[in-house]
Length: 270
Image (cartoon, rainbow, N blue to C red):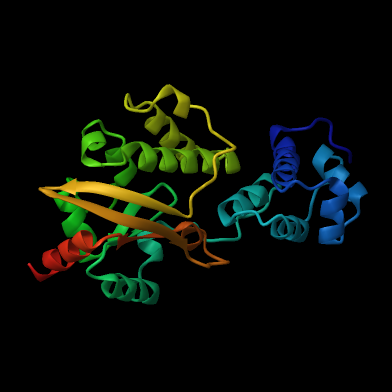
């Protein structure tokens, strides 16, 4: 029996498929060739004339390299159950993986290292991070710490010697992530909260698509009488079947000069 009307849910999968195809810069023919599916069928899926099977959703999402959380959304929008566990970062780090991450944190001493989720909330940190960031006024003692919220407070403009460079790079990164995942309500809420801060210049409120995303962000922070200079790097887990692990990030701080290196070792000894 033919459907008498098109429901809102019937429109969601076609919209998501078209969105991700556009994000990857592919035509319907390009996607069809990559996935070994006819361009005609891709067109029918995007217009809602055809409904996908669960296998087709998985194939197209894999071909488009869609993040795992968004693959779950594509599956739900097509009427299927989510395929990938959506644990919290704390739950994901339980068991053997947590033991391995703890070993990484210990081996990074005396330099700070933190594990963050997709909303930049710290779920685990080594002693150096807790001590040095604590001296800078960021308390990592809570189970989940909002680091970005602290950076965009007025008091941190003076604490961070290169606040404009550091905060600007972070904000542009979050803006890009929102453009990449516009349906992520929590990520959108994080961006709106950062943009609501009075310290954000007007020219930052619109994303700059031309600005290059730096793989490494320098950080200059004042702690007491010392001015510390760190190089920060963010790396990701390779977790092809777990949403939480797919989104976890490890942020590591490396000293850029002898003063900072000596400070880290002194804090560790004390």
